[in-house]
Image (cartoon, rainbow, N blue to C red; front, side, top):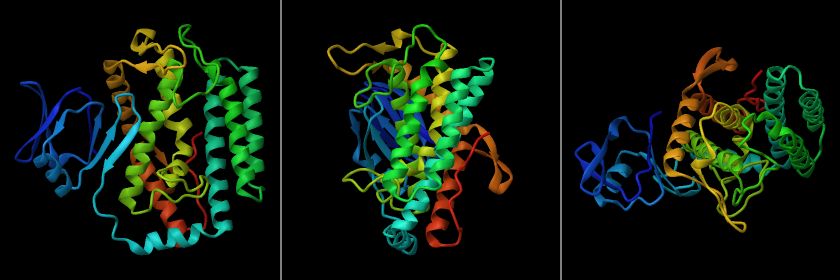
Length: 336
């Protein structure tokens, strides 16, 4: 899948045959061949998308996403819904069954916790056997084992929250750059550079998962772990959980520890105002994220190396088969 990000503020998108042109004032900045494009992400103040471009994007079924300059999802250019009515009916019917929702939620939370634990253990080994990280990993393992025995969604959600508290309680110890400190997870808005990186990474991850959900034909707004809420893609929130410690958090830690960003890349907020990413730094972060999605890893169900983006789509298809009843139980994608 090919994704293009347009971050040039004040840019205009024009069409020339099968080519999209990105203009800034009187200068052409880039050309995109639409036939090779699966997704277009417009970030920030894109001054104008001409009617010819909008019509062409719809006709070519290019998934077009609108985000703020700081990475918050704003909207999507929708095409016709999936024609796989049987799959959506199965999703609606099966997820109305409390036991089906509970079983799926337990698998998702267990996968998230085990992947978080694996990431913490890798960090502990790199640090020569940190006792604090080893203890956190042991607590996470106990929670992953306990969640399997839980009887209600509220218990599962509570376990997920406690595991996150344990993890983010030691997350600052994974960061080795003296300029970047992490006290706790904060969002809406993020109040420090580390949380800005995490929030942007999660937003980009949610976009990748929602794209896969749309491709497969599931309804992104009905999930199991997350309650139905107006405007929230609950299934996307569910299915992205297992990748937070696989894709986003390792990337954020590596960016900080390897000096990919400095404090000059952020605009400090005042009196509770959010910390903001400088535009050029944000472009670099987006590029690093796309590189991460293109990395290949062994996907055990197929005994084949796939990119992370392909793994996400395969897992969404697996979820669809579970809802259709052709796969017995959801198996999360686990790292070692």
